[in-house]
Amino acid sequence: MSASVLFDAPGPRARRRILLGNVVGALVVAAGAAFVLTRLADKGQLDADLWLAAVDANAWTNYYIPGFLYTVRAAGAAIVGAGIFGLLFGLGRLASSRTVRIVCGAVVEFFRAVPVLLMMVFFWLLLANAGVPSPSYWGVVIALVLYNGSVVAELVRSGVHGLPRGQREAALSVGLTRGQSLRSVEVPQALVAMLPALVSQLVVVLKDSALGAIISYSELLQHARRLGSGEGNILQTLTVAALLFILINWGLTKLAERLSRTVRRTAGRTGTTAAGLDAGVGEGATAVAAEAPHGLTHGEGAGPGDPDRPARWD
Amino acid sequence: MAEYLDIIREYDVLGAFWVNIQLAFWAAIFSLVLGTLLALLRISPVGSLRWAGSAYVTVFRNTPLTIIMVFMVLGAWGQLQLTLSSDFNVNFFWLAVVALTVYHAAFVCEAIRSGVNTVPVGQAEAARSIGLSFLPAARMIILPQAFRGAVAPLGNVLIALIKNTTVAAAASVATETSSVMKTMIEFRPDYIYAIFFTFAIGYVILVTPVGVLTTSLSRRLAVAR
Image (cartoon, rainbow over all chains, first blue to last red):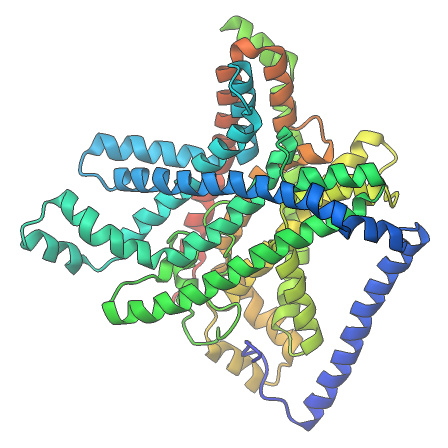
């Protein structure tokens, strides 16, 4: 349904105007597409053999699939690493020792502020100089772990802060220590609440793994580029690579949306507030936005403005 | 130490940061305009426009920025001969700005839409009841309040944008920070840690004030309700 309060259920005149608007809008979109397509055709980019060469068996078996496997390998390792890093530093930021809190906070804030590509280039050259095998792979993985790990750490922290105070009080009153309460009562609940945010973070990891092409890691984009420059159909192969990324990431985004609806339902029962989480790591006003105050956010696009993760970057 | 300062001067580190700041500046302005238009499309009563807006957001939010950059250089410039400036290097700069703009416009659109969600229904109803139609209501009532609610998410988009300017390396902008850092490390591997921390601290200095400023602005501008 239309997710706006800006207009009423249309009457007959408004319906005519909307129909007119639809026709005009569709024409404008079609005209734009036609313009692009004719320009492409003028340059001979629509020739069938160019496109066929971009999607034939050779392209898939020798380029896209191997490239995609490299992408998955780096992204998978980065996800596991980021989860561990995030849990460690997230717990560190909640520790009772002031020093540990400050150190962990500084580390997390630092890695969130530094562009991922800078870290990739640094670790790539560092490991290459040290003679480590496959430095570009490790460059990609380490940079992604550090950046996304700090985002996860922030999620853990804001997740725990979002829990009702009674959870900790109950844990302490049955004799658990502060640390035990964190580990066995608070963090597990926070993890459930942050599940949707974690899944949308996967999209970020996958997208950022394409940065690996810049440091000559032979992932999907790099393979597509190699195929395209060999066959002279770079536009086409890049389009195929982009479509692959879009499909996977779109699927993950949908999964995150579904999870966030489920979690919100469950959270309603247990009193866990997942709210602020979806909208940029609980930063003041965004939390307000996430609560979708007056039900004008049904359906797609509900709540979190920025599934492409939180606070900083996507 | 003195020798290291010489290296920094030799490779014009400040100049490299200046290039990234300019990239961020132009891309921020253009993507704010494009993103606002997209947000308008997405909340408009006309179905086809809503569809076009959400198709745009879905496509560009899920495409890696690196692919868009590579596409601009190898595709739009290399194959389709799209030229934005007669100067060879300046051309790459503007291609990178276009890539950053089309990518971040999708996020700006989503940030503004989350801002629209902070405006109470009553405001829209009041606007309608005094006879404003969609565009006037959006322009005079909804968007001004939506922007105030969207400050924090917009700040996050801006921070992402500033950091993402480094990806201009994929668009052959050789004078920006990540390219310069790579060159410096290749020629002076003995200073690799110092070089990396110089650039990293540079970004901490650039990004932190933006975060602090938008957070405090979002508190101050939030409409009390």
